[in-house]
View 1 (cartoon, rainbow, N blue to C red):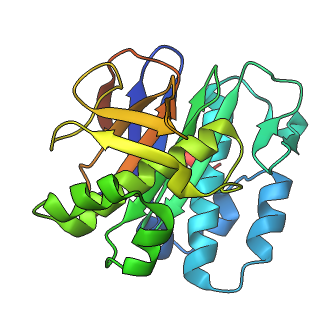
View 2: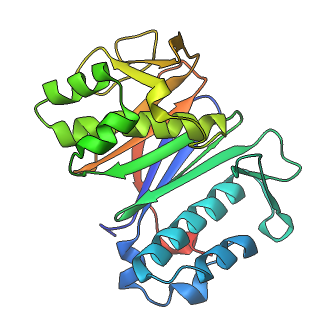
Length: 242
């Protein structure tokens, strides 16, 4: 199963799951096996493009899998939306999750505290987007890197995972939050050689874990935890569909 990816980070009480949507293409019988929450199927059925549908289904599979792993009965599970649309499980204040997908991959994170995740694929730099969403210092850091496109993605996923962690979404200018990277490798946490994160000039009490093991993709998770993470890649079998 070279194309079905399950990514797992364990830090305190949180885990990440990921999936390669190409397995769904290879096994069209997935519709007979997959058990998604009704609200997820409602969302999927509104999507017209097949690639987008597969990504949404993959995210739904990970959501169902993660909920079951956390002891949630899918038949009795109900999702409610926060003020800015961030979903959560009704009646389970101690369980938080977040989803993201792009290209060939979907990812999901589950935690006992607020958490945000973002996965992005390599993209071409556009100066209009840089000027709108990044400070001059951030732009200078991007331009100083040997792989400018992936440098952009590193900063973008940090910002996206933060607004998803906070539950606000993009309801304020991304330029008002600034990512300060103090080294060129995989960043760790604000108090170590990695990311320092500021909002309107004030450093935020958040931590970031990153994964860049998939060529041309980058994953970033935002939490309030400061502990080191242990990453593991496990191949998931089709029996996790249902």
